[in-house]
Length: 452
Image 1 (cartoon, rainbow, N blue to C red):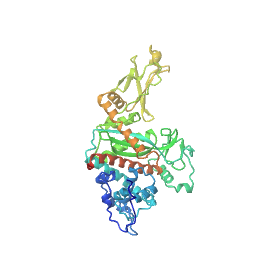
Image 2 (spheres, rainbow, N blue to C red):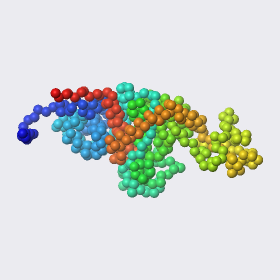
Image 3 (spheres, helix red, strand yellow):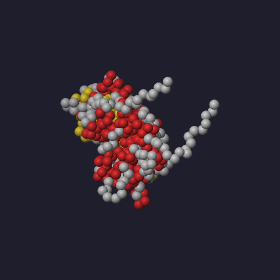
Image 4 (cartoon, rainbow, N blue to C red):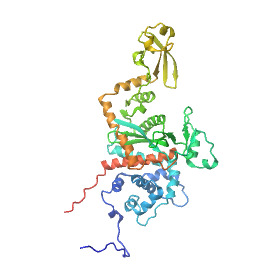
């Protein structure tokens, strides 16, 4: 028999408890069990005025932002509407049924104001890292580092060739452009003097013109992660314009910051070939970190069957190379491009050498050597070992984190502009990913009741 219609709304008063409406195993209830923001108000108090009208509770806005990034609600306007309607969102944000939701413009004011000035989003991220450490999810045996390209909020069809733009007063009033212009005059400019960008976005000039993203060409930022390979917990995150040199520099910065703030230094680090530069490998070995990184040696590429550097013997004590014919190649000590020493044979030795046809077509043979060649040789010797191969397998977890960020958290295109905007978005994304892992380890939901 068909039942009668239900759900009449003619009652005048209701007895309603929001706590009872949220299931015990709801995802937000589990996150709330591991999320502690009691320290937040004290941290932000110096950035609020002691007079005037009471402001919106900063913990409320942080909780709303976490909800937004958990459920891929990237629009602040949409987030406010959803929190207003969704009971679970209201409960997590500590709001009652009659409490008003902050206006979406409040997020913009706080994100670009006191949140950014205090770097509070990094502190929220670091608190989740500390929570993961307490839960035993982070050690110091093996870390992995990598970067993934995220499209900037800048049209690839509106670009200016080169790196010089005459900014108007109207353009300089925009936050992303002003930050970029101010950074040009700082000690760490966003562009390198010897490598000017090929194109620039008039709306987000800090974004790099790249071919590495999901489009053939686009403006983008790199999402840099440093993770613990055992449980795939993100221990550091950094935003950089998309280029390999900036990503390698970010890897060093993240490891230094991780040691400074958490007293964590890995025994070994895994990365792809982009991190196999001599400078990076030398930096790692100087700090007693074993580099499980592939080294791509192109010094003898195109040798066309002639002797390669491997055929020359290096005498470390005398700092010379000895050729297959027994002659010496010496260096002047000049470092080219900041990385390379050149060792030259005498012209007279090469002119009278019976092996010259197998060696060079020039007047004399030259051999290039990286200033960190010992570190490169040491790293190459590790390739193929059992520990190296295991790190190569474990390193793939960082790719899964990037996939999770893009597919499940909608981190495919940024909404905020400028390097600081990318910084804020990446920190929130990493915070949510760590909370998911912390919840899986600590906040185990109670079993559901079985209906007989």
